Image (cartoon, rainbow, N blue to C red; front, top):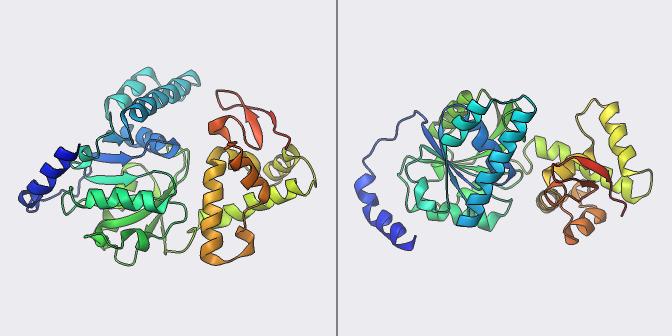
Length: 315
């Protein structure tokens, strides 16, 4: 891979005059966790080729298998046909080679909410892709302007916040950094139109809108549980039925991933100084124990291998 990177950097000057079309035919998605796989599904189902990039070969193979399993489950529940599954998988190419993203019309990063990891990925990309390529980071709370600082083309950098399950949720937030150009915003707007999503344009602010509003609710539900007011099951049932939600706050935290919830709350707490974002000690305890929610089959609740809730995890 090092030799390929060197070759691409040396040859990049020969590509600078190339014109990148506003049309989006191929997208590279870096990171194939829950969000990355869900986005791959959504993009491929709309006829766009997807280069799916993971950190190593084993992770890439596993991500492909997980997507196939999720598509099979959708078929089982009559939400997808076998033909649609084949079509989606035929448009998804899996690799651990970052240089395979260089031919994409748009590059979207969906790795974990870690500033240094994201910055490292974009600095590598900055040296090997065409000058007109758009970089998008999927973030729940990080500063888009700060992530773009130090890049050669901060005007090509933009933030998006995708809500899972991506094929079903009709909106996503788009966050412009201080230097993000209108051309970059319009490219993301065109991408959203392809996916039949409504764009919610957000001014850069910690947590944007969805994260900033939902995180205090999840955190407060954890404090209610920790104080012994009632059981976790009762908390979720009360909020779910009382406010016509699909799931309660503790189950939602399990679905998001307790490690991710903790990172987001810590970022919001540091950025704002507001006590409402101070992570509940019970959340820290679960994460330290490795109980991260559905992805480990144990969080505030215990789940089977298919993600179905079995019972409450009494702490």
